[in-house]
Image (cartoon, rainbow, N blue to C red; front, side):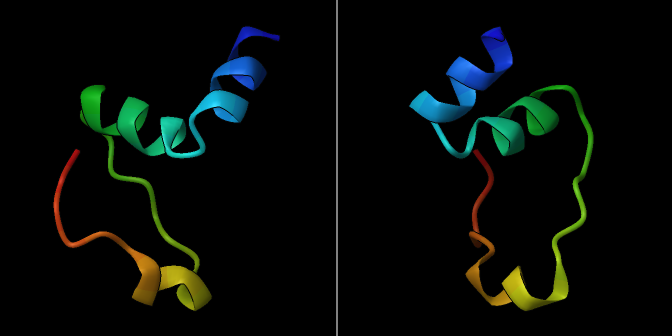
Length: 40
């Protein structure tokens, strides 16, 4: 429930959480061109 609230408040929460934990999430090929060029 708390993760869902965080995701609704900030749609990039998943990316920031993975970055802070030292993980690299794979991007779906159709979304790679929308990938930010900088780190959070």
